[in-house]
Amino acid sequence: MPRPLRIALVRINQESNALSPLRTTLADFRTTHFVEGAALLAGVAEGGVEAEGFLKNAELSGFAAAARARGAVELVPLFSAWAVPGGPLTAETHEALKAMLIKGLQEAGALDGVALSLHGAMGVEGVPDPEADYLAAIRGVVGDSLPVAVTYDLHGNLTPAKVTGSPLLFAYRTNPHRDHARIGERAGRVLLDTIDGEVHPVAAWRSLPMVLGGGTTVDFLPTMRPLFRHMKKLERDPRVLGCSLFMCHIWNDHPHLGWAVHVLTDGDGPLAERLADELAERAWAVRTVEPPRFPTVEEAIGRARKARLRRRLGAVCMSDVSDVVAAGAPGENHRILEALRTHGQGLLAYVPFRDAAAVATLWDVEVGQPVRFSLGGRLHPEQNQALPVEGTLRFKRESLALGRQVVVESGDVRLVITEGPPIAMKPEFYLEVGLNPAKADIVVVKSFFPWLIYFARYSRMNLWVQTEGITDLDAVRRISFADPVFPIDDVDDWRAIDRQRRGA
Ligand SMILES: [Zn+2]
Image (cartoon, rainbow, N blue to C red; front, side, top):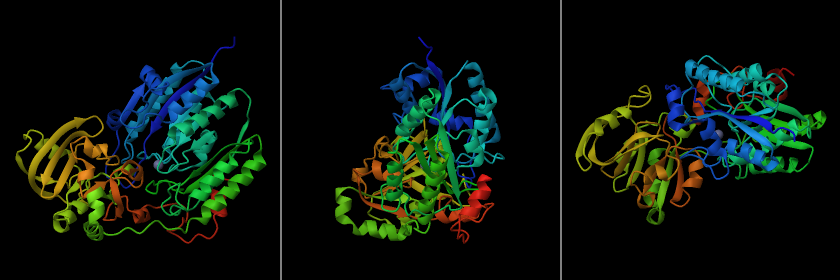
């Protein structure tokens, strides 16, 4: 009987916001998600939980499912490190992760392949393309010919170094992302078929000088739906092993940031080139579909106030688009809170806020006691001011990802103050501190779109509010790029820049 195929499993995943004043360290990975060895294997096994409190099944579970379906595969678990979006990693965090990766591969013994989950928009101080650096490190241990299947977030930035590192790559196809495991499984299948010699992947890709477009970029809404459907249709052709569309993370400061497309075929180079080219044309065509215009917070509060019936049936959810923690913002924007205090009388509002120092001050206070303290203005003082707060302490709790949390009742506002990033994307953020979103008039979320799915039961009106912060869409203008990119510059033709970027 032939020996089983040995596939190493590993993840290094974080989405970085280059404009954040904060830095991401190993401690941030450890508080969000860091598992290795047997625990990783148990997490990706059938019925296991891959990322506790976050996702039951993600990419590595998908890889594992593909391995189970094939049979005779031994998974070699290295580690899985996933941090909440935030500032770029410190150089030493990057070096530490890379050292773990190299050591894990060196100790893994003979391998037939590597299954790797990356983000694609990770930033590291002083390292322009850190994920390509991980791929180079892998190649340094396993050599150039070993198949390495890589999954990316569709907000990743595809670069020549990443494609050279491994062209066997697959990006999510949903936004908000719901297909982590599905993409992992597809990548796993193609990886195993490649090792078995059943397929011979050939890749083609294009890099587009555009950083915005596609409207909301939600996969099931009108602008992007035809593109994702087209890709699905392409994959019905057995010669097509996969296609990816990258829409980039606009606060990534890679000098060649932009959308990209990538197509993998089974041994058919000209077909891959033709399909990648056509897909690039389709993506380029939606560049002029602008993102939705967002109301000011005062307008939004006015709309919420008028929506009496909807408030009675549920809540008005407001996404703070200027301070999206799920896109790497610090979570200490005070503007919605300030506006609620001035314009929101009589509206019960839940507001998340990150301030470790305030939590430390309030932690020893007994629940039910009055409190008076200064909130915020610490993480990004150039942008966010401190606010005086008076109220009553209503709740205290400690969790792994958010650290210590306290709830302060201040007028009609219920402030949920967290030590860690207040990633208010799911109702659990409030439910776990005793606040039922169904009872609120206004619920503030710190996510662009995924919250739409999670809050569907509670939200009767969805609003996106622009104040001022590092996840504003126009904040992208503060980043300098090496090439002209749309819509910051007038770009008529993508082809010359694409060829230059790819070195074609
Ligand atoms: Zn993403």
